[in-house]
Amino acid sequence: MGTKNIILNLSSPEKALSGVEVQRVTLPGENGRFTVLYGHAPIISTLAEGDILYTAADGKETVQHIKSGFVEVRDNIVSVSAEMQ
Image (cartoon, rainbow, N blue to C red):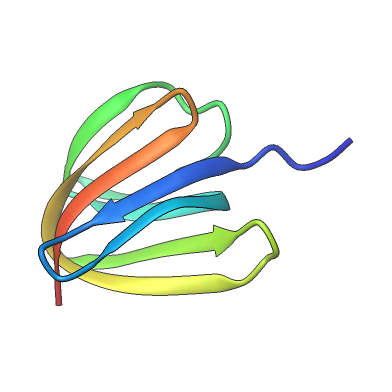
């Protein structure tokens, strides 16, 4: 049985990344880091300055530093709007 992935949409005034299939996303929440996997409960959260780490479907890890932002998780789609550094 294959791995169940989620979709990451990341947008900022500087750039946009849409519809990337990922295994997981780790985010810098205001109350600490948290990881979103397939099947995560719906959530809206503010994000603090820190690194977003995501693992692509092929296993490649990518890090993007942000200054602040917010995230919405719903139906295995992670939508991040952030000011990037």
